[in-house]
Length: 213
Image (cartoon, rainbow, N blue to C red; front, top):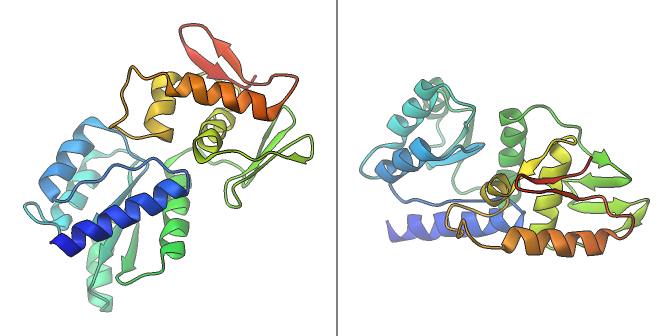
């Protein structure tokens, strides 16, 4: 199981480098516990989890009727195994070993299905953000952002002018281990504003959150 935990940690770290917020657990019981308290866009699920089998976790996710999409990982490459996994309600199926770039592409595709449809490029107030290329332009000029700044800007643009709370940004751009009382969102927004330049486009809604109107 040590190898499987190392793989899970490696996947999580790789996805975080892609500006995705990731939580990790190593058994099915812990997975069900997290799923009961957190809303996730995508669940990357190893089919051979200990304590509670991955099949049972998948059934529970489907029965809950939420918007979480399931990408099932397995060492079984036979067609009947893939068919059985999809029949459980998994949205996608990836056989180990796999190319990490393919995993990222599949996670992003499932994430788009878990949310209201968004255009390939997000544009508002002179800002153009390309999630696939991880590029940002302001009035045609490239803007170099850190991973967290990019993730925060993406969430604000996806909101389409609506206010995004600090709690939502913490949940979507960081992970559940972040201190809810941290000022990391405020600091990240401050540096984001500086890099985007004038006139300022990210507005603070006192006591509520942030928006790009």
